[in-house]
Image (cartoon, rainbow over all chains, first blue to last red; front, side, top):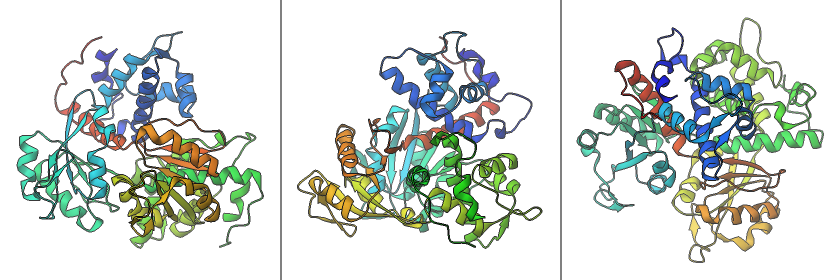
Length: 235
Length: 235
C-alpha cells in the first residue's frame, strides 16, 4: 500500500501542485485526526461510509479524496486504521519530524510553545525569536529567546524548514522577509495580514475568528427553522 | 438578493442541517475573507473565476457553493464585492453581533482576548472566567476575570450564545457541561479533546497543528517532484 504512494501523489498528467485540490489536502488532516481518535479508542478498521458519517461527508467523497493518493483499504473490510494513519502521515509529510522556528513570544507565542498538539503530529519548535531586547535571553517553555539577527544561523544549523509568525500585523512582513532569507520553505502566519512571499515559499494564514463564524452559522441556521427570521436590511 | 436568503438557506426537501455540507460553510468563511481583502483594496466587482483562482477553486465550485444559499451576481459583471460580503455575513450570521464568553485565561486565553480578528467579524468577548482563585478578580485586557460560579448569571444577563473553552484538556468537559447548563448554544473548543455535548449545542474544535500539517504537505509534495523519494517503510 505505502509503496504505491510516491507514484500516485500527483496522478494524471498535470505537472503542477494544483493537481491535488487544496481542500482535499485540508480534509486529509480531518481524516487523520478522526483515525487517530478511533485508533486510540481501540477501533481497528473503518469503512469509508463510517469515516464519512463521522466527519459529515459522503462515502463517495471519502473514497474520491483518498483516491487522489493511491489505493487504500480492502473490499468488504474497509480501511485498517493503523495503515491509513501511516499512509496519511506519509502523504502529509508528518511521518518525518519537522523542526520549526517561532518568531514572537507574546501571549500567543508562549501559548503555542506550550501547545501539545504540535509534538503529536511530529512538529518541534526548536527555537523562539523576538525583536524585543527585554525578551531576548529569557527562558520561555524551555527555550531561550533569541534575537532576530540569530535567525539565519539557527535555521541553517537546526535544519529548520518551517516558521511561525506570531508578531503584530505591522511587523509580520519584515519577519516573513527574514524567514525567507534564512531559507525557510513554509510559513504559518498568525498575524492578520496577507504576506508577500516568493512563489517557492508555502504560506498558510490562521484566522482564529473562522471557528466562531462556523458556530454562528450553525446556531443561526438552526434558528431559521425555529422562527421566521426578521427581514434582512434591503439593498 | 438578500430577501431570498431565508427561503433558500436549506434548499431541497431535506429538513436537517446536513442539507448544506459543512465544508461548504467553511468555504464561505474563505470567500468572505478574500472579499473583505479585495474590498479594502478598492476592488468593486469580481467574477466567480477570479474568486476561485484566488482561493484555488474552480469557478464552477464557487458558483455551486454560493448556489446553496441563493442567486448572487450579475451575468457578464460577476459579483459586487459589497453585496456579496453583506450576503455572506447574512448567511454566516455575522451581520449581527455576538456576545462570547471565554473560560480559561492562561497564555492562550489572554492572547485570544487581545485578538483583533474577532471584533472585525462581529464577535465580542464580554466576559472571561477562570477556576483559579488567584486569577479571579484580576483585570485581563479590560475584563475582570470572574469565578466559574458566575457563569450562568453572566450568560443570561449579557445574552451570551457562544463560549470558548481555553482550559487544559482534563478540565474541558467539566467546563463544557457548565457552558451547556448556562444555556450557551455553541462552543469553540481549543482543548485537544473531543467533548460530549447534547445534540442541540454546536461544537467546533480547533487544532492548531493542522496549519503546520498543510505546510508540510506542500513542502513535501514539492520535493517529491524534485528528487526521487526514499521508499516508505514497508508494511
